[in-house]
Image (cartoon, rainbow, N blue to C red):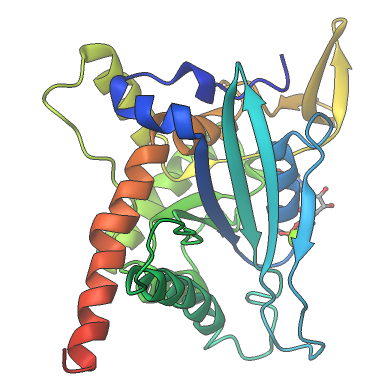
Length: 296
Ligand code: GDP
Ligand code: MG
């Protein structure tokens, strides 16, 4: 079942309240051009089944900017609604001088915090619109070597403002062994630079199955992803994948890549956690800093 996402099967009661209201979730994708961001977004939205409606903000015509584009889609599954927005950031890392590539993205994330803060200060707070970014998927080029200075700088600048979820882009261009080694190297670099990537909390009251599932998902970070919006036929089955002379890489096959795990984390197992961490920690810290700076 290609179109099946799984959020209608939410694992526990924490989610009951949201189920009634429907879910809203906003993720952002960042990474150099050509790393497969747009393709992954399409893969995530399952374009064929749920054509997303685009509402691209008017973009600046000058070449040296990072654009902010968002795509929203309402997905419904077994009567449960999800409004999923993905914010794409074409232009990141494409300039001759990329020293400040992170800046327009940080500005965008903070301006969404500002918009939320402004609403909180209104008298009527019944219709709050939450456009805050709940997760930032950061695409790392599958070099097999180490993080680039651009990656380190971006993550260092952003980690206190957004839940960072690093992924290895186009993981089908590396062998299985290379992926394993590259993941270790990336995590070592992240630790060395004291970068805080998203870590799921564990709860004592979680059942064993949930804890095992969480551990399994967390163990895959940085997710080795492969995107494709094309279907390929294999043994009479139609699957999404990328075919090579030596074989086929299936996007939705967990033995081939971590795309399913990433989607599971975002849309099913950790959606509420990512939103709570954004609201309770990241936004709250921003708000405190902002009010202090204003002398309040
Ligand atoms: P963006 O610039 O980051 O949005 O990248 P695109 O999604 O436009 O993809 C750039 C090129 O890479 C296209 O030709 C895609 O077909 C190809 N591509 C996208 N995802 C993958 C992937 O997972 N593996 C491989 N090998 N190629 C990919
Ligand atoms: Mg793109």
